[in-house]
Structure formats: C-alpha cells, structure tokens
Length: 280
Image: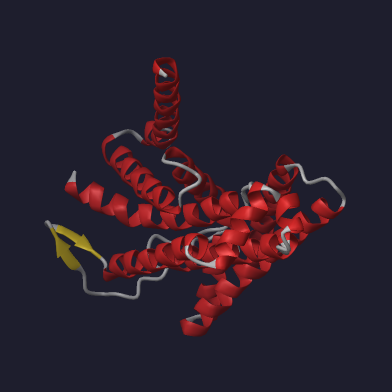
C-alpha cells in the first residue's frame, strides 16, 4: 500500500499542476478550458522531439501558443456578444480534439517517455525516481507563483475583478480583454510545464490529453475550483485513489474508481451544504 500511495502522489502532482490553470481560468475569467490536457501533450511531445533544455523551452512555448489561440477565440466570441461561458467550453473541447488529431498525424501513436535518472531513491522501501522530487519542487514553485499572482499583485486583483464584474471593471479602467488574454497565456504556460514534467515521469501519447484534462478538472472541483491550493491537493488525492485502484482492483473496475471518488466527494459536499442551510 505504501508503494501505491507514493506512486499515486507522484502522478497526482502532475494532475495538480493541470488543476492549477483550470482554477486560475475559473477565478480570472469565470470559465474553463478543456484543451489544457492537449496543450500538455503537445508540450511534452515537442520537448521529446527537440530534446535538451531547448526542447523544454520549445514545448512550453508551443503550449502557450495553443492556449493563446483559444484566448483569441474567447476574445472573438466576446466581441460578437456571444460571451456565454458554455460556448467557450465547447469551443475549447473542439480545439482539444483538433490538437489530438494534429499530434497523432505529426508524432504518431506510439507513447513517448524520458527517464533522465538511472539511480533511484529508497523511500520506505519503495524505489522512487529523483524526477519525482524535481516534479514536486517545480509544482510547489508554480503553486506559490500562481497564488502570489492572484492574491498579492495588482494584476491578480484586476484579473479577479474582470471575472466578477466585467462591466464594472471596464468602468474602473481595467483592460478586461487584456486581462482575459493574459490569463489564457499564463494557463498555457502552466499546462506546458505540466506536460514536460509528465513526459519525464510516466510518459505521454497522442490520446493522453483528454485523460489529463478530465483528471485535472476533477482535481480542481473536488476540493474547490476557486482555490489553487485546494485544486492542487485534489490532484494528489485523485492520483492516490487512481494508484490504489490500479493496484488492488481489476483493470475494468479500476478505471472508473477515480470517477466515483469525484462524484462521491461532490455528493458529500452538496449534502453538507444542504444540512448546513437547514440548520441555519
């Protein structure tokens, strides 16, 4: 069990990293981008093909570029007064499918993975790659930067104001469209980092994008979509549940256990709110 928990934490860090941009987008724009998993896959595969530090930079920039295109679509929808959040969610879902096809035709269907370390750590009798430590350190830095940006800088306050009341923010002199566009760019940056780290952990294939997006979305909603910290912890929780179910349950059952876990948490939260409201 200790082995599965440790491995689940390692995988959960990647899910938490994808939950961060989802939480950021929801806080700053009031919507979500289901193509974030596809950005991560694109970044990881570009990193693999180019190789080295330049590959990491190229992979992250490719994710930023892809996210910028969705940000542009958001701007066009808003310009045409079709700013319904569901419209953008559906548009991002369609873009995710397009990116999956693009990755399949460009990189092929074989999985890609890099294992930069040959020596392993021994943690409670479990062999763990030092890459897990790198991922955790990078995740903590990204979490701190995201949290600081949102709650300790004028830019973060303008982002949140633009989401809560766009008209009022515009009247206050806040460039709402620029804030929205910059949020998508920053979300693409975070997704690119997550994709590169996932490449060096468990690998990626063209079809990994939707699984990563759903895992990141599930991680973001189970403990609170409006908090980057809770979203990140939700990713770790889902990673542990997924690892334990893969270790102890048949494969056809293990695949649905994380979904039942997400539904169970949401039901418990709804029930708790109902009873709290009744007592009030």
